[in-house]
Length: 256
Image (cartoon, rainbow, N blue to C red; front, side):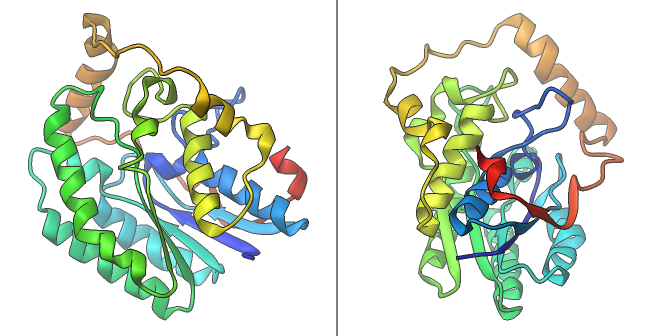
């Protein structure tokens, strides 16, 4: 059982798409921490250093050392989603950086939770291009699942998670249901019970959602602003700080 957990990554790990009434975001990593605290029946330390918009390089350069310095028992690592959305991506170089980061975490004596992001490509413009990149990157890293001290959770190939019911309005980020399903995948891989009150199994058993269609309004609200940020070199994470930079106590009742 893990009693401290730190997470690094981009918007997927920060929790974008699972917005709370006060404007903060929750997300799958928060759910995982809640599940660990509930299983332990005592508070655990939880930190989340992920920042939206970050490519793999900045995640490793800006977040990895800080997370290792916290000395958590479990450290989750995800990245590359924003790299896939750029005009070019070298999957082999990206995979090599992944491996280097995984090795650094293991050398620090920390159990690694490595996970692929959920696959939104059935709903996005140019989705087939991004799907192929994600598939190649996942394939290049799948052997790490057999490395001691590493737990690999393959959300990219979770077919059910591609259902539109799990995605927010921008079709790029998971909604609260999607984040809960990812957390369920993670907790199951760690051998930790998934709280029934989260309703993950019930949602998964329900009929699939309707086929996604991208309207002109969707392009105006989501696609064009994203292109505008790329052209001007801006990121949605510019100026943002980690939402939970240190291992703060999380109580078991937070999962209820």
